Image: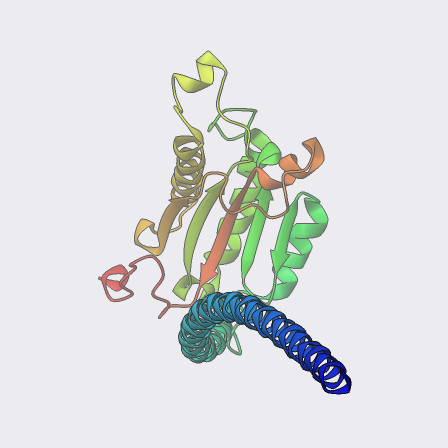
Amino acid sequence: MMTLLRHSVLYRSSMSRNAQALLLALAFGSLTGCNCFCSRWQLRQSQLRTYQAYNQSQMLASELGQSQQMASQLATEKQLAESRAGELERNLKVANQRLENLAQERSKLHDEYKHLLTTLPAPGSGLTNKHFEELCRRYPQFEFDPITGVSRFNAEIMFDSGSNQLTPEGQRVLQEFARILNDGDARQFNVLVVGHTDDEPVVRPDTRAKHETNWELSAHRATAVVRQLAKYGISEPRMGVAGYNKFQPAIPNANDSSRAKNRRVELFVLAPDASIAGRDSNLSQR
């Protein structure tokens, strides 16, 4: 009996150990399956993150390539701009130097021109500044510049509006002028007569019939002065005419007063050897 009881206890003890082992195996198996699932999920997440990182890397690489290409293009444009700027700077220096040279040449020519037009006489010459100064006092609308030798007549003293017919007062002024140029050594000087107008066009029908534009009017008035001087004894080979229209105003044509000053006839007293407007000084002496 005691033996049977002992076997029964041993059997139950054995059964208890087997159940425990089975439970442990099941628990281990369950834990192992969970670990496998968790590893696959983590691997999938890692793969997704790797794929996203790869795509971002590709996008950044593309943007980097575009930026490098743009940087290269900008560098090329910068070099071209710097080269162009250097060329422009060199051209500007050349242009400034040329302007300076032209300014010096113009100043030199201006001095020569003033010298050619001077009326300062040699000792014993009958043409003196005093004669012209006296003429200016007698005729306020007559002007004389002793430096350039320019005698300027206001057109209104010499011509009626739109006409090239000399007024009586204009004839008297020209007679005095011719007397000075025909006196003594003054006979060696020549005369260039230049007509000027204001900027108003010729509109009156009776004026247009004789002087179509201001070109004709300025030239016709200069011609009338030359013909009158010839009547007063100045040799025609000593004289020349020019018409400048409105393009050589003495002052800007701002109002009626300034326009009146621009309507004028100028007489340039030229040195014997002056070559102005194609004049050959040798021909005038034949």
